Image (cartoon, rainbow, N blue to C red; front, side, top):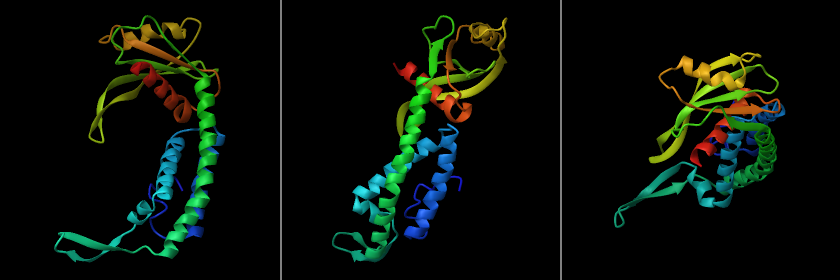
Length: 235
């Protein structure tokens, strides 16, 4: 199983043994990724699943609303449709059993994910190259992996985006290039190479994120570096 559906508890067969199998299959994949220090996208998915689980647990009406309802009749005085829920006590008990089984498993994996996140964040040094310009809403950032001669450069753009019909500040990032460091090409000199590659942007902000521990680039180092950059730009 590659991922877990957002409505995995209430969709298809509502059976404790079946849902137990579905969840354990999913968590086995998460465990294997966490064992390799690969944090994303699993950590973000776990947080979302746990929040959904707690909502179902604390709100019995939310439990019932996840099921199809059949039209029972029409109240012409109130001009309202009356529905009859297809859920029964047996199904509700199955759901409660699934939730009781699932909650501690999600908590355990979330704690492991939080441990990986905290470890990675503590082992990423943040700096900038050269003098930072006044305008910092777009620029570059560099990933410098642990004990590596190769570094990876990304462009970023910090701007307002529309999310759920609301304007929020978002960070858009895109891979730009990679460079191999040497005695003559140190990380401090990379800003000149970046400017040469894009002369239309003569004095960009360039941030450096250096890992002091072995972190998977795509699954851990990059997403946490983005979060750290976001914090810098909003402050």
